[in-house]
Image 1 (cartoon, rainbow, N blue to C red):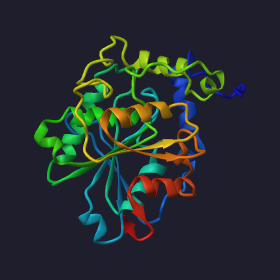
Image 2: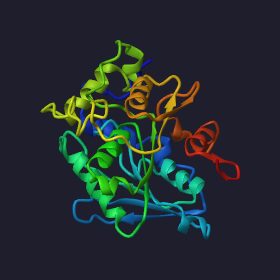
Image 3: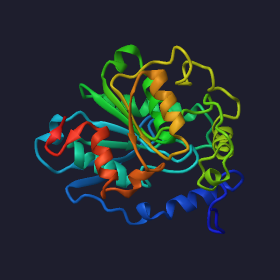
Length: 284
C-alpha cells in the first residue's frame, strides 16, 4: 500500500522520482565485492560514458569477454551509479570486466536518443575485442536490445550472448489489467504508460521492427536468457520477449521486480548465477 513517502510514478515530477531513486539503500550503501575495482568511463563520441568494474583476480578477467550493461529505471531515472551493486557483482561472479554505460534519460531526451547512445556505446566497446556480452535490467533490457538491433549484421555476430533481468518490452506490449497496488510500486499499467509517454511522445516504437522487439523482423539476439521474477507485474513482458525472440526464460519464483538490489545475499545471488550459467566452480 502506498504511503506519504512513496513517489507518484504516474504524475509526479521526474526530479522527485530521480531523487527518490538516488536515496535507495542499495544506491547509498551497496555491499560491493572487495575484489572488484571501479573507475569512471569518460564520454567519447556518441557514448555518454559510465562506470567500469574490473575483477582483480588474474587470468579470468583477461580471458572472459567483456560485458556491456544498460541500467534500468523506467527510462526516466537511474544511472550506472545507481546500479553499482548489480554490475559489480556480475564482474565478481563472471570474472569479466563490466562496462556499465550511461544513456540519455526521458523526458528531456525522447526516443531515439536512448537507442543512439546504446549503439554508440556498444560500438565503442567492440573496438579492440573479439566478442562482447550484452546485459541490462528492466528498462535497460530494452535499451540493450536497441543496442543490438542497431548494429550491422557483421557487428552482431560479435555479440556472444544477451542476458536481461526482469526486462520491459516497451510500448509495443499491450497494457495489463489495472492493479492499484502495482501502481504504488511504479509497475502498474498507468505507471508504465507514463514512462512510455515520456520516452516516446511521437509513438515511434510500437510495431516498428527496428525498435519494437515484439514486432516481426526485429533482429533476434544469440543466446538470449531472460531472468524473470515470479511475482513481478512486468513478468508478462519478459515472457513475451522470450517467446518473440526465442530466448530462455529463467523464473525466480516468489521474487519481485528489482530483486537483484538485494545482492550479494541469497536468493538474489543464486538466481543471478543461474541466469549467467554459473555453478559454484564456474560456468555450467
